[in-house]
Every structure is written in structure tokens, then in C-alpha cells.
Image (tube, rainbow, N blue to C red; front, side, top):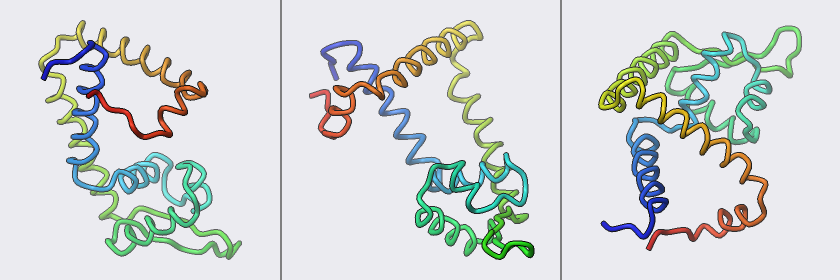
Length: 156
């Protein structure tokens, strides 16, 4: 495919890689993020703290926790001191899942970037950090927000 600009080609490549990583890595990304958040924050995180850490609505988090509890990856228990608090913990199965996810991430990262030498990796990282910082600044730009809200962005 021929692109009108290098920016169009970059966007296309970002979509391709991002889509693959998002859609083809096995589980729902929200569930992955939840399990990783629990692992990073240690055992006994409250449901409210988990909700705040992940920036989710209570109903969304509750649905995710229901699925993970049914699959045996987490447990929930009410606090003995304050019955309103619910603690969420990884089970042994959940811990094994996060270990496998970390190992897979390590392997995938290596495979994806093995074609670059260390200097090229550093250059790519610097450029992506620059793009990321610009993206963060654009989030408050009304024109950018309009384009995103329209959901009608394509290279054709």
C-alpha cells in the first residue's frame, strides 16, 4: 500500500502492532491489568482501592471480579473490622497466571525488538517518549478531542 505521508504510514504501523498486541495476546486486557495491579500492590487490596487505581466504575470492576473469581484467579473477602470493605486477593492460580504473563511479556519484548541493536532501541525509545509526551499534551486540545470523538479517522 502506498501512503500519502510518512505520518500515515506511522499511524498504520502503530495500528497494526497495537491491534495485534491488544487482540491476539489471549485474554481481555482489563482482566490482565487487574491481575497485574493486584500483583504489584500486594495481597489484600480493597475493592475500592482497586477501583481507584484502575479508574473504573464500580459496576465494571464488579463484573471483572466476578469473572476472575469464577475462574479461580482471585478471591474476595469482607473485612472483619469493617464489613463494608471487600479485600481482593490473587489465588495461587492467579499468581501463576501473572507469572506466565510476565514471562510471556519478557519473551515477546525480546522477540519484537531483537532486530534492533542497543543504540537503535534507545533511539526508538527516545522518539516514542517524545511522541507520547506530545500525545499527552494533545489530550487537552479541543480540536484533537473533536477528531477523537468523531471516531471517523482513516487514512483513505
